[in-house]
View 1 (cartoon, rainbow, N blue to C red):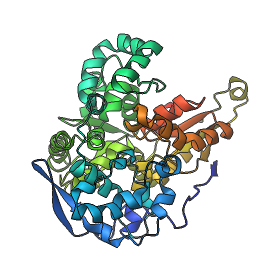
View 2 (view 1 turned 60 degrees about the horizontal axis):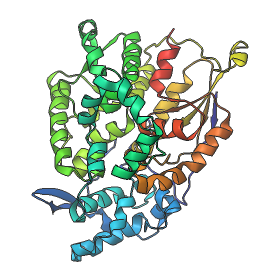
View 3 (view 1 turned 180 degrees about the horizontal axis):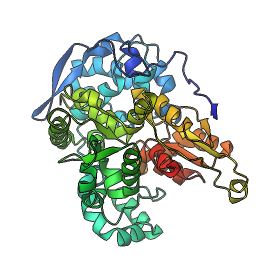
View 4 (view 1 turned 30 degrees about the vertical axis):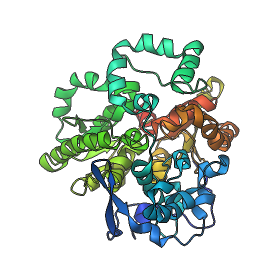
Length: 456
């Protein structure tokens, strides 16, 4: 059963990347390329591409109306001023850089709202990288270099999780690094997903049909169970799961925190592995993170000048890939799921779930695939929450100066979740999961985990 609706929060019809390019929302395939004219700007010793789409801005300010930050933070001038308007000024005088650009979360909701297809979020991110005179802080390096932190932390996960959960330690981190003491820190897994997978590799090779899994940092270091669930679901469809030969963090935390050169290095490593997998071995790539997927497909070429054209259409979200297989007649045996309330479960009451649309999922226009997939699970009653930002925006919500803004952005979502009366919240984004679980009384899971639980 599917209840609920998406509520537009602006005066124009929102369009995803694929619809804007004349594509079909259910195929996700653009009918033509719509690339704006571009030139270059210097960032240190590197060169970033400037998107001249800012010239198409009609000053309607719908982007500001739709911006989650502008609604709660009066210090942020809004996407129109920070993006297209500011770009015109920066072209004349780079010294006119406005430090308030740091408040942008890179959620891309301004781009979804824009009727003129101005790449507002990209413009702001490039401006932050090109014109800011502020060097990244130690705190930003710790939050951004997820592979380093994960590698160092997983062997000692029980100790690190216990220590970082202590209030005095969180207060100390706030005073020393400005990581807000009210923010619950993510827990690390004792052992990585890749370590677990090594024991599964031989079995996975036995399947005739294969997919490759870009697991990302969250699955590898924080929540290997999601990766295990993905393997179970694909194996149930008689599909083996491979890993990329080399995988680095997708780079999105590096991009938003100003580590552009490191992000480029990691992007090139990932692109080499993706090329080897997609072109060399003819294996499609799936991911469980909406932000990782969006970064691999769109942020690499738009913000890092790393061309992903040869592999882009073979990299997609696992839920979208599974939906397409099932829509083609493939079978996935699923059993009914019932309420988590013991009293209701004994009466076989339906499991009531609420789906939250992550910002980058909204940008890709792929929410419909996950919703259709969830509808296939017997015994599930689905509520679709209003499409709005949860506020955490990756590393953004961990910073002391952003905490109040982060929670203010998500306040209406948290209230809607509490009022919904659901058993469980579902989302395709790992940081949304952290934010929802910290800010509400509900547990939040990935759609793949729910599918794995329903396997017959």
